[in-house]
Length: 352
Ligand SMILES: Nc1ncnc2c1ncn2[C@@H]1O[C@H](COP(=O)(O)OP(=O)(O)O)[C@@H](O)[C@H]1O
Ligand SMILES: [Mg+2]
Image (cartoon, rainbow, N blue to C red; front, side, top):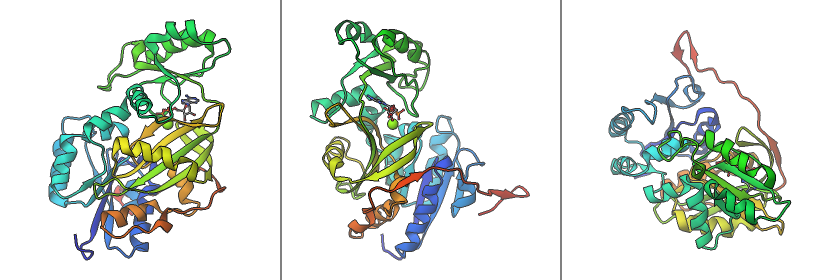
């Protein structure tokens, strides 16, 4: 790809995380690269319709029309770089569809199906990490709750959450006394791997030791050339959560997290950015509780402290040398999330 060719960057299902559209746009400008940022959305009331250079409406990822619609749009438009912000859409793309889009010349930042299946299932992921010596909390299936209740010391605290979950789904913080009921309650709303109801199956729920320490969100930025080289690490302490995303967070040194994110990178071999949630145990050891193989809800806190991950990703996609300064930021910066308002149409006509 010569640097004279305009670069087409697609961000699918950004929804309310539309700040990424603006930051990729800014990054193209700052790097002096000609190109456009395209929002791909299911709803035409998404903020992306007012912010991106171009916005495209796609059928829902779980509809029969989705694969053909995305295939034919890619064949027509030939984008260079593709990110998806929706975990379930990533799941639908991973595998043959992502490979077909890659054959059309696009860098599709989605894991291989085996690795995607691993991060989708919090239980399998935790077991795989444990096997590889990556710190994780003690973890059981909800179906083993009797064993946990019989063996755990009095005063133990737990976390119950959906095995295939996101956005804090099915989350409970019971003590030993309430553990069985919490598993049963969480199982009522749990989903299986196919996205359908798990019908009260306690094995669709996970029981974890409660980690009492600080929680950090950590991004690993990996090269896009297929070598999954770790280009940089960005971290923030989560001070307050709201609706499954940080609401208040304070940037932190990446150094304590470099090794763990590198280890996770070895397992997942990602292209682009992934993010993990880690929490400290009683000894201050940061243990991995969650992995999201995509641009995350926590990166904005590092962006506000000076990082420019979109620029680093664009440079990698273009085959330009990595500029480490783009992933540097000031530690100790506290940022709070707020609402934004974006005009998307006038008189029924989209504007941007
Ligand atoms: N083992 C744990 N100990 C303490 N808190 C936890 C634990 N697991 C999850 N949490 C809390 O619940 C939140 C959501 O859990 P997480 O595993 O990140 O799932 P999700 O995919 O819903 O983001 C975390 O951000 C954390 O605050
Ligand atoms: Mg999480």
